[in-house]
Image (tube, rainbow, N blue to C red):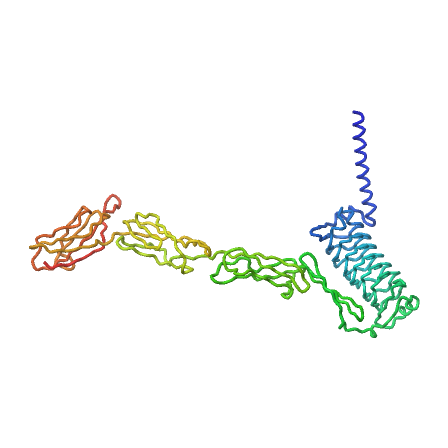
Length: 535
């Protein structure tokens, strides 16, 4: 038991010592600013090889180590506005870093800040930077283009030593001093543009790598330096005028993941310039969803947006649409990048089934008799849509798939209709039609004179009635008519007797239906069907 307690105490002591050591290490490596101060003011994200640092103040020494970031992970570094200083050695040894974006407002780049960033090929230092530290870009072997800040007063010693790919550099107006070996062992460096503001030149390069200094006007400081350092030569810019007509250039293609560059190098003067091809960020469609239009192909308008928020010109990409993109379904258009851009993107869009429209001009109830079938007029689009019909009560009125409505008996019901869904069209909304069925005319009425003054009246029986009324008289307006009631709807004949000789008779046969209203029943008659005969 004693041994176990002693062992636990040793472990606790070890953890405590390690923690204290970490705190001490952080305080020591913070150099000019403590780790706690920086952590409170900075934040960072690392995604898809892009490291973004934001916040206020200073980026500390050994940023990767302090934040437990593998220095071989970032391929691109973006420092956002608000950062004013990069401490010495902050990004030292980040071998995979190819692009660095520095913010306006940055004032200081510390010594060895980007030492050994072997894949960094260009750097633009904003004009707000006033101090560039010693060995700040030493051993950046692929660094080919440098734009220096106009706010600099001096170039620190060994700042660009062993930048083996650097071919020319322009020192901005305002720089007064170039310190020792600022461009030492830059094997391809052929020309340095010197400003009139320069007051002091130290040995900039080694004997093995001679460099030509180009100045605007005669400058005694340069003339004295050329005498002291045989590796330097001097020419006035007016004697070195070049219109850059013999440009050699190379293009590093841009993709969805990285920016590209167009690097131009003048073969006569060696001046290097660079144009950035911002990487492709996304494809944007003005319209992504379409409706089927009979016989017409439909393609979305596609814009390619670059990382700087602007549209990519049409000459840099080609869009291929699928064949026969006119029917409902999901389609993919392919965007192929070209002319300095590389890669392809697939953009998905949809064609939905077309909508079908169906409606009546009026919502009024339709009243029809049961003796004649009828149809309902509908407005429809498209004109050839196929309908589905249904009756709410087929015992009152039935409807077939052609829309023919047949009254069955007295009453009201609803007829429902909609356009059916098919491979090209969606189902339409359902239209409801209120229908009232009323009694129809008595059919097949015949008058036949029988011997003497007798008349036989026959008709087609209709059991939907409760009975029949037969009116007859000699006046057309039926003012002298007599009425006979038949209370059995199964009967289909009646005899009229004691008629006047040589008289014209008018005969009406109607069916009646007893309708309950309140406590009483009242008759409802079929339409009048009048016949005449002369006795």
